[in-house]
Amino acid sequence: MLRLAWFRWIAVISALFVVVVVLFEFGFEKKRKAPRTVDSCVACHNDIKTVGKSHPISVFGCATCHGGNRYATDKDVAHKGMVKNPARLEYASKYCAKCHSDVIDRVKKSIMATNKGIIGVLNRKYLGIDSYPSIEEIKSIKTDNLTVSYFRKMCAACHINQLQSIFPKQRVRGGGCIDCHGVKEKNNPHTILTTRIPSSNCLKCHNRSNRIGLAYFGQFQSAGYGTPYKHGEFSHVIKGGGRYYLKLHADIHWQKAQLECIDCHTEHGIMGDGYEHKRFEEQVVIQCEDCHSPQFGKPNELAKLLAQTNAKIPLKDDIEVAYTHKDFRPIYNLQKDRSGRILFYRKLDGKPIEMKLMSNKPYHTLDIHKKLSCQACHSEWMPSCYGCHVANFEDKKQFDWLLHKPTKGAFREFSSFNRFSHPTLGISWKGKIMPFAPGCQSFVTVYSGKIKPKNQFHRLFFASWDPHTTQLRSRSCTDCHFNPATIGLGRGSLHIKNGKIVFNPVYNSKLSGLPIDFPLDAFVNIEGKQLQGVSIKSEMAFNKKEIKTIISAYSCILCHGSYSDKIYQDFESSKKLFLEGKTPCSR
Image 1 (cartoon, rainbow, N blue to C red):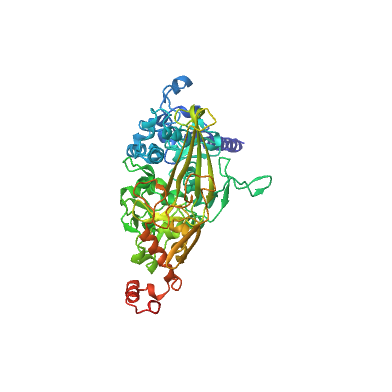
Image 2: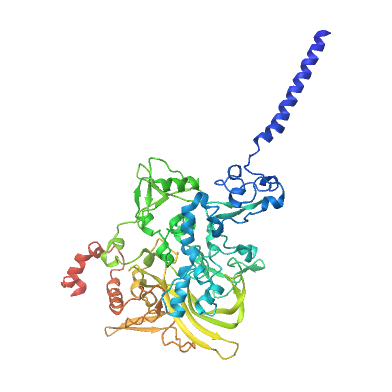
């Protein structure tokens, strides 16, 4: 009997032990494992799970970035002095700069913060002056200045420190650092901070002007047509509404490898290098040669930091990373291992892609092509909007993106026609042959409360840029040497009659009611006279001698149209034999 009682006590004690273990495991232990925080904010804001792996709440808390009273439990006391968005540049110097002081200083001077490039081009176009003030410098200028008014009404929505609350929910831009580094996560009310920036963040702004963002993904903004119409709605709608696109070939880097914008563009090229550049072209670091003809070295501290922050890209001690040719900055996601294999890692998911370097075939090495940029041959198409008709109504009001309220001076824009094929070529500010397109061609009519215009004038400009429509296969020799649109003459028929070059344009500006005597798509005439201005002073169209040289090569191309032809194996020797009359075609 005593033994039975003893066993019962053992059973009870064992059961209590199990209960204690279970309670500890699922109760007390769960509480112990809950993430600790350095302030009391999450007591109320417990729906915020994370703000990104690089900013853990358990370490940073909330007040480190947002300010306020980290120890208060009363709402009003806790929120006193708090900043809702510390990533705005005016607050970033206090909050973000605790860890990122160098970056904040550079971003404030970057072209995306100052918008100097846009303002400078407008000054050159409308006022005829070379002046590149920043957004801050023009805030105090009255809007009766045409450049300032146009910028504030038509352009200033896109700068990284724009006020986010003025946008509809689906088109939010601005906000400082989070304009690029912020992404939304389902069921999380807080913006997630990341360095793995999706291209959708870039496309918020880079879908107008030269439309690089659209072109890279194979979208060409159409002239207003909404077709095709599928399932009760238009299918090819540009995000934000009101515009439509045609589907063309996407850039090979997207089409073949699904590379995002940040896979190529470096942090210094985007966020600035500490100097207040006049134009975006001066700030951009990355070049085709950086990846396709790379220079390698051991990873420096910046490369290690960037790889660690990304967290998707491996960076071992026994590998080398590529460095840019322009300023020797690390391209940490382009690496060469000990076996000599070159791998390019995608920044969003870390997927490795084996790289092939640029060949040393004649088309890349001939002296006659040493002035060609990669884009001149490998850009398949370029979005071009011809004839921008700008109506300025001085007495009407339009939303001012700097003052955030309607102010006097309204604008409306209409184009003559859009095209996407055969990029025009010219001489860029770097002295290289690059694709050119209207940048832009403004026919301005100013109204001041009357039916009759107060003023009318036109400013026609071409500009060079990389259209981001790269293809592996280059343009044909004929397309460069005997296509009038490529040479800059515009679309039409080109032929040689009695040794003289003759060109007949398709577009007639006079018959279209325009106050110019040359085609809208003509950058230069057959005599080498440049017909339109340029956005950058040192850029230019081909001159008469260059046009003649380009076209005269066509007579050789008729027979020698492929680089597999033996004359290109040693072109200088072939040229010497030709000039000496020792070749069949020179007799």
